[in-house]
Image 1: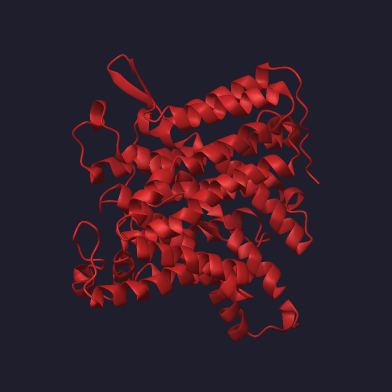
Image 2: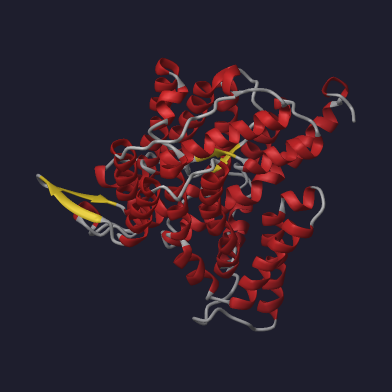
Amino acid sequence: METVNKLSKSKMAILGLQHMFAMFGATILVPILVNSYFHGEGLSVQVTLFFAGIGTLLFHVLSKFKVPAFLGSSFAFLGGFSTVAELDTGKFANMTYGEKLPYACGGIVVAGLLYLVLALLIKCIGIKRVMRYLPPIVTGPIIICIGLSLASSAIGNASMCWPLAIVAFAVVIIFNIFGKGFSRIISILLGVVISYVFAIILQSLGVTNVDGSSIINTSSVLSSSVVGVPDFFIAKFDLTAILVMAPIAIATMMEHIGDISAISATTKNNFLSDPGLHRTLVGDGLATSLAGMFGGPANTTYGENTGVLALTGNHDPKVIRIAAGYAIVLSFIPILSNIIGTMPTAIIGGISFILYGMISAIGIRNITENKVDLSKPRNLIIAAVILVCGLGFTNGLTFHVGTTDITLTALAIASIFGIVLNAILPGKDYEFNEN
């Protein structure tokens, strides 16, 4: 294999394109899913792509151009978006879905700023002292709750057209298990594309959704322009929405630490030490806050692109920055976002079967890989309380402070109970390993 120094510009461009495709399917799926929660008044695919590119470049600047990581849309915040969309207390009672969206984005801004708090703590007192309050027995069950809380949404979307949902589901599994090389890495994108072709065939045969609507609605594509500016908007802030979104940062910060560790192992460089975990957290957090401030979803380091690093053997961060440039260019092509917006609901449901389950599976992996001893009563109690709170408080908990209605979501309640119980119960047995 050619070394980095011998690669021509054209080959670097191709490798960058490969990274762009690796992140593309999952990144654009986030605004599509959020749009379903907000009944068509959700996030823009163009804005999402723009901030995936800008966020990645910002991350590279703040991490001294050393870490070959791509920042794409985070699925962890989907539950928060879904909750904000259905808020109907206080000031949200008479809002349209589109009017609620900026408040969800305001919550993302605050969630991103929490990264800076953790980064400052790590810089000042050391990573081991901070992580003792966020061990796997707390973060693992919280991540599990994030995925399981979205399960009903996957079923609801898939039920619009079960044959189409099953095809999407099956294609992703086939390529993920039996695919070779790059096809395995982009199994989600292939699932979307192949099932979309199947949707076209079904529509040509006169098949409709269960409610009688067309499987594919192309009216928006016919009126769209080829070139245009992304539909940015300014975030708004409300304590209820902040308390919905911000606690999710606990899970995504743990995901960030895991991803940086994985990239370090892949490239044989200890990025936790150089440029330092505090720098990568600042990069990820500011990228998330910037996206949320102007109408984009939260960002997160992408495992898909780590897979590309391992597959190609090329670890040059410049290739990732080329991919970021592609994402920014695509964000100024409205017709592309409108074509993507015709994605049938059933395909979203079929893909979500795997994606939502994968979020929970990451939580399980977080527990098992860290060898959490669930035979210990303290650990069982912490996990049990988090799971019951996270899945049991389906409508959250609303209370009044003065004239303000504040709603704690199930995830916020679970996070609070988990952190407090871990802090007060004796018998801590977790030691963070920074090597």
